[in-house]
Image 1 (cartoon, rainbow, N blue to C red):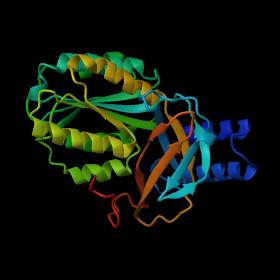
Image 2 (cartoon, helix red, strand yellow; image 1 turned 45 degrees about the vertical axis):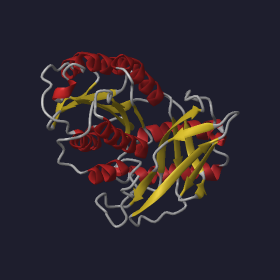
Image 3 (cartoon, helix red, strand yellow; image 1 turned 120 degrees about the horizontal axis):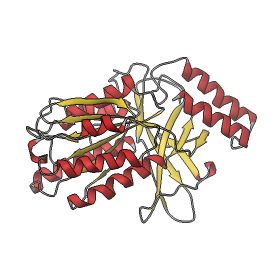
Image 4 (cartoon, rainbow, N blue to C red; image 1 turned 90 degrees about the vertical axis):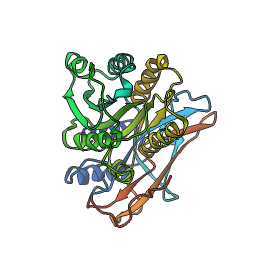
Length: 325
């Protein structure tokens, strides 16, 4: 994340977006502290919290022309001072997780085509990995920018078995954390039904994504699923996505998936980067709720991470994020 922060600091200090020298020095000091500590920026071993925010109007259209003064950030209800701000299309480390269970057999060709369209619509400097999952997740393409490798990894014809979606998300977050080289992280999950094969619990996934930098986008192809199972699958996908500042989308028809993935690619490339140094500097293991609002000529909705775990120890459980919705 430090590469992005160097860019943002240089831009805001030069442009005057930082209101005074003291604020600029705070940003530089926060960066210096962050560089001396691991893991990357959003983790609360640093004093700086970095958010990726998507802004839409009441019609769901992206709003991409706001300045720093339009945003208000609150942590646990207390307003925070924005130290850095940016709205550039910067490269992302992306994982594509595709359901390869037996029920996907008839859908795979369209899904594979849409996944490749998603990559082509993304930033050319993005790095992408591909993980297919059925009874268990399998990394078929490690991080690459080579479209031929991605085409080979996405194109699968052996759809068989159950749906271990939670296992796949758990493994994908670990892979991102260990191997991503870009400053921003995202996961795109495509599935057509309720998880019925994972050994990973939903609570573990909730806590894992709460500690992760990754924004999760999910596509649920649930039209053929029975109502009770479809409802549970929808709820789980929405919760995982919304906790991270992402979104879960549910196309009514398989033919709509191309437009859906292109919309997600556009959202990823149109996000704002907002950083603040929390007033509460204690790394005490508590969960801090985040709310970001934006003002404009119309009513605006901001999607970003709902909170973070303020702990030096990534395994701390003294006050894990709430497991309820």
